[in-house]
Figure 1 (cartoon, rainbow, N blue to C red):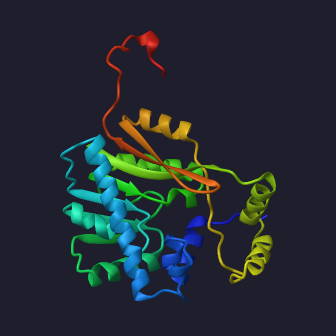
Figure 2 (figure 1 turned 45 degrees about the vertical axis):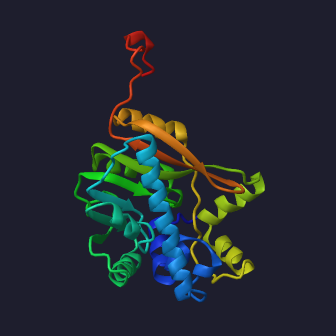
Figure 3 (figure 1 turned 120 degrees about the vertical axis):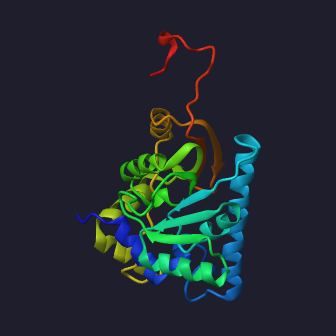
Length: 266
């Protein structure tokens, strides 16, 4: 059985079909992409950035005004470029060199001068903290959970004291046992995946877009141990895939009347 490299897969998406790799809608496929579709693509990013900032200001920090923003898994800049309106500078990270180049072109085309982009790695070496806002949306589901948890720890290390992170995770899939088994096999047996691609009318070597679920229990414990609190959850997803967006601050939570050692959960 062959283990697949998700970073390698994502680099292929960036080279072969970057907009569809970010948002899996047929209108964003390379052969269907029009100027109108590109404008719609970035409009959804603007709506998302406005939503994120609105939720933070409504529920966590009314006067939140981040200076430095990091968008992890930025793709071609769908959210990173709109976030530039909300801060002094934005850094977008992605493992795909092709997507980073496209994001740079998009920022230049849209006249955004305070967004920079860099290729990411497992240690996030291209990012020099601290950042007041760290964001990632529909990214971690494409990364195996244990690797993703380590990246979350590193992102928290880049977050400023009292800064806010907004990270999205898939946490539950309602696939049948047969569907789950077939997807598991497609991730590990390359010829089976190639045959499925042909059956679905895709190029036979087109990479599988992984949908990895994370344990919210493990994520909450990770945040607690990293000194992050004021955690807010917003659920999203339709059909069989269920996701959650975690909003949290680098600021410990403690219930004031539960201070005795015997009452502490950990």
